[in-house]
Image (cartoon, rainbow, N blue to C red; front, side):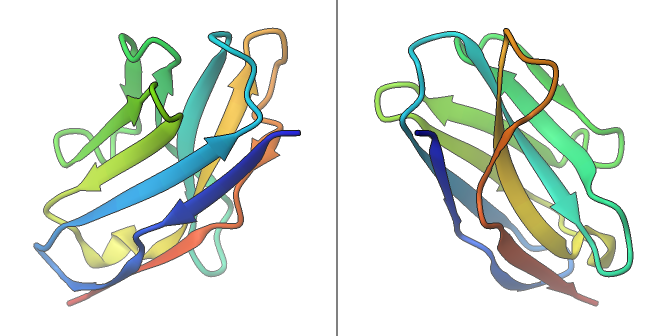
Amino acid sequence: QVQLAESGGGLVQAGGSLRLSCAAYGLTFGNYLMGWFRQAPGKEREFVALITWSGGGTNYADSVKGRFTVSRDSADNTLYLQMNSLKPEDTAVYYCAVRYYSESEFNYWGQGTQVTVSS
């Protein structure tokens, strides 16, 4: 059974940085993508970034390109999101998720971690 647990959220001033972590358990070796999504109050959940199992492929939402970096430690199946130059509009609950290549959607989600950026 896949389990994901995010941590690292908090309150930060605009221009500051945070690093989110996501510990993953129960994943089948080598055949999945890992991603970050976020949901702001009153808005739909949106894609932020993803990374392939090998770490060789990444993709970012335009709104975070150049400011956020997604990475992973394959040794212990931990996903990271380094967030720099944070803006108030980055305020949201951030979720990590997993999609197996054999599936069409991200079907496994963590409980989320709150990120609040003050102006």
